[in-house]
Image (cartoon, rainbow, N blue to C red; front, side, top):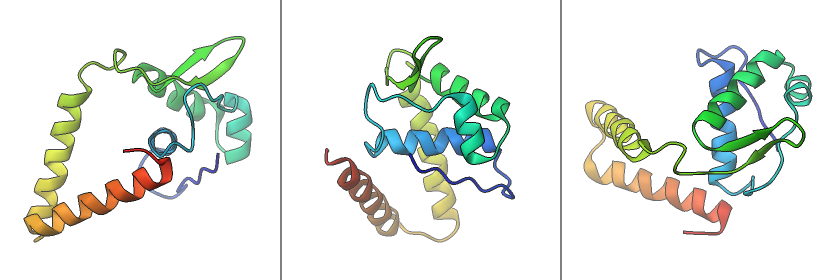
Length: 129
C-alpha cells in the first residue's frame, strides 16, 4: 500500500491517511479481509507519530471501513451497518461540492463530465461497477 502525505498541507495528517485508505478500499487496491500494517509499522514507514496513525485507524473503524483485533491487527472490513447515516452524509457533502463548483463557474455538463470521469477512473482501478 503506497501512501503519500502532504506534511505541509492544511489538512490534518490523520485525515489524509484516513482518506488515502478509503481511496485504496474504494479502488479495490485494498481488498476485503486484507490486513493493514500495524500502527507502529505504518507510523515508521510514513515518518509520522503513531498516535496520528492510531487516530486514523480509530476513525476508519468507527466509520465501518476496518476491523481491529488485538491479536490480528487491523484489516479491511467494510460494513454499511457501522455507519447507517452514510447516504445522508454523502448527499450533504456531494451537494456542497456541486454548489462550490457551480459558484466557481462550472456548469451542469462540466460537473457531470467530471463526475463521470472520476467514476470511470475509480471503477477501472477496481474492475467493478
